[in-house]
Length: 469
Image (cartoon, rainbow, N blue to C red; front, side, top):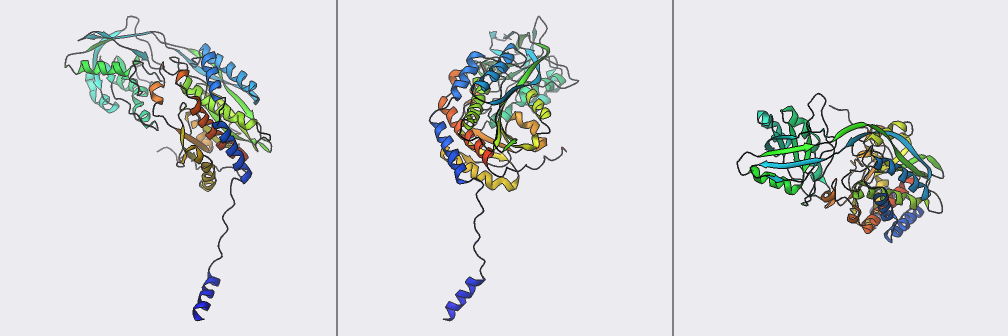
């Protein structure tokens, strides 16, 4: 009896069990998101969008006739697919023409090579440049060359490692962006780099460089990986290696372009925006199928499917096809400036810009108090094999100008194991795109975008970035 009374007293003193917090995503929302996801896996129109853009427009280098044709394509396509408020928001973009390029090893064993100009490179003199080659395996090794680089053609030779998450690109791409000016500071007359890519095809990979103010501008080009190996082999002979480069690129006056925008208008809070982004421009070597027609096909089709529901979502889903991501984020900066007053009402932003690789992880950058809701959104993607990542997402290059406004961000990480075989190369063409992988991406994006647009309580803003040191 004493034991029973003691137990009863303990039970009476124990705190009452707490009810679980209410779900951020009601059952009806989860059911609709699951249905959207399942339907996308049965087949979508994303591949047809990619086919249309790459076939009817093709290369879309900023400022080129292809760029203007892409804007017209975007307006026509979004209207045909039923988007509201379709418009072109003006953007001024740079205009650089690649011209022609010739390169060859002239000694000790003369051989032609396959190479391409880096985006934004100045031309060589009309007669070209011929000089001895000096190799550096990193930017730090380049800096250490000192006087040995003067009057030489510097060759930056590191090879990009293959990684599913694309981390090898971040470790290597600095040779392309910073290499030309760092070589010029040492008196080099030109720069060659090994292509920043993972392919062993004899096809070079381009990409933009960044000239520093007040530093001489020298011509810069990327060798295909096999030709970078060839140049290294000749250097390994111990004999002086000379190279002849003739590059006829030119910088032209800026041109008008535009961000192309279309919307699925919200039924209750149309002023609140879920932003789905891609970039409309591409490099000129291929047809921009993976970078970034695939991303445009994914986000356009995801938003279109939300717009086809019997009832519009609570908030507006806005698709933005950004101008000039490749040459300096002109469209992204213009959007952030034009919509500055509206950015606090952007409840979530995400960009698809990594080809057609299957989504394997969801990460975010939102307020800490919104993380339970993010867990519920992430759970929607578990049938797709998507795991939950962290809360430090960048979300894509075109979203960088939104960071000062503390716009919440989602990133759907894609398998990039083979992406950099084709990235920025002539091999970025439609035949490399998988319709089924696009469908899996659409299934992930449509569920996330619908949840963010329909949930009752919006995701909170992340903390402000710390001030620079």
